[in-house]
Structure formats: structure tokens, C-alpha cells
Length: 290
Ligand SMILES: CC1=C(/C=C/C(C)=C/C=C/C(C)=C/C=C/C=C(C)/C=C/C=C(C)/C=C/C2=C(C)CCCC2(C)C)C(C)(C)CCC1
Ligand SMILES: [Fe+2]
Image (cartoon, rainbow, N blue to C red):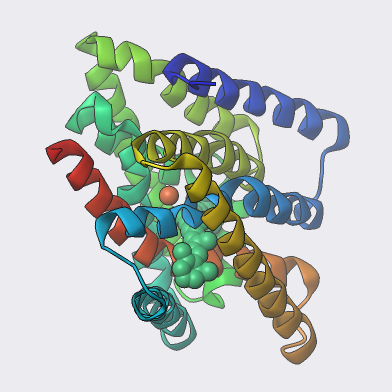
């Protein structure tokens, strides 16, 4: 299966339709949404990061156990430093998370030129806050323990507006790239408008970002079967880590289930994103200059 661009856009749009139908029929509350988010991210989102190990093996000659230990240590060390920032300065950590996420997600439109790249990155993060600011503020409050949740949500709504304006400018230029990106950007804006933020995030992150990244990375890796085997091992370790973190929040901290799930998912992703981004950008450069 080649999973070309029209297929990728189609999977995303079909996912949005399914989630919209689910939302209309069952109207899941915040706890159910969080309980849908966790397995979706675990099954469809985490694997794209699990390919970081095979990617690193292409970037550096990780031959023996010592090289691997060094890589794991650096990866977990960086992720741990980000998690510590959430502990020490949750408001700052949330701002940084949203900023570097917009940058990372903009890579999904890398092939469409700078204007659409910025439009995509800002729209993904800002669109839900523009339509559902109260829901976004309450999720941010859980993540940042209430610190700056409201101004941050309003700030990303403004970023979303800028993203939409840049997208419109790009569309008016009517380039081939703009036409290809059009369906995805329209999907993002309609999805963010009609779906609760967490369901919208499942559709974008699991069905567009993660699938596109996995397809591009697997195509660029020399040995796909070995890469998938390595990624499977990493998945097992990551899921074990996430379960331990969830248990700690629930039993040691006594936080309720919904808040615990939101923290494990988003703070976990925030921590993994920094080493993930560093690797992805390096790999991208290598691919482009090859
Ligand atoms: C290799 C390795 C590993 C693993 C790793 C992994 C597995 C990774 C992953 C990674 C990943 C997987 C990443 C991801 C990312 C994500 C992101 C970046 C996200 C973001 C998000 C956001 C930003 C959101 C926002 C919001 C909210 C929160 C609410 C609603 C609304 C909105 C949507 C706006 C380990 C550690 C084991 C070891 C060492 C080595
Ligand atoms: Fe990613």
C-alpha cells in the first residue's frame, strides 16, 4: 500500500466524518472523550514516534549495546527534563508545548511551501480554541494546574486566525500545492468547529500527522521489516511507561481519572515531542540533502 497524498487526506476526512457521527449519536462527555483519546493515541499516535529508533540507526552508527544505551539515555534525559519543566513551571511548559507543537505539525505541509506550512501549523493548534474556547481552557487548566490557561487559550485562538488568513492567501494564489492542501485545511477547520477539541485532536493527530509521518519515514528507511520490529519493542516499553505514570497519578496523587488521563497523554506527548522533533528534523535534512 503506497498511501499517497489523496489517500492520506481521504483517511483524515473519513475519520472526521466517523467521529462527527459518533459525537452526534452518543454525545460523549469529557471523561468518555479522554477515554477515547488514550487508546487512539497509544495505538495510532505512539507508533510514529516509535520509529525514532530505526531513524536514529540511520543517522548514527548505533552498533553495539553502549551506543544504544547512550541513545536511550539522551532521549529519556531530554524527555525527563521537559517533564520536570511541567512540574516546576507548568504555565511556561504549556506555552512552549503549544509553540513547538505548531512548529512540528507544520512539517505535515512541508511539501507545500512556507506559507501553507505556517498556515497548517497555526491552524492545527489554534482552530479548536477559536470555536470551543471554554473546553480548551478547562483542558489547559488541568495540564497547567490553572496557570495562565485562559490567556494561553485566547492567544492560540489568535494564532489560529492568523493561520486561517495565511491559508486563504495561499488559496487565492491557486497553486497546485494549495489545491492539494485545501482538503486537509478545510477538514481541520470544519473538524475543529463541529467536534469537541479532544475528538478533533484524535482525527488530526492519529489519522493525518501520525500516518503521514509513518508513511514518509518507512519509505525513507532502508530496512522496513527491521524498522517495524524495533518500533514494536519501543511501543511496548512506552505503553508500560504510560501505564505506570497513569497509576502514579491515580493512586499516589489521588487525581481523578479524567485529569490523570489528560495529563499522562498530553504531558507525556509534550515530553516525547522534544527528542522526537530533534530526530525528525535531522532526518528530514538528511533526506532532503541526499
Ligand atoms: C525512541 C525511544 C523511546 C520512545 C519514544 C516514543 C514512543 C516517542 C513518541 C513520540 C510522539 C508520539 C510524539 C507526539 C507528539 C505529539 C504532539 C506534539 C501533540 C501536541 C498536542 C497539542 C499541542 C494539543 C493541544 C490541544 C489540547 C491539549 C487540548 C485540545 C485543543 C488542542 C488540540 C489545541 C523511549 C522513550 C521508549 C526510549 C528511548 C528511545
Ligand atoms: Fe510527530
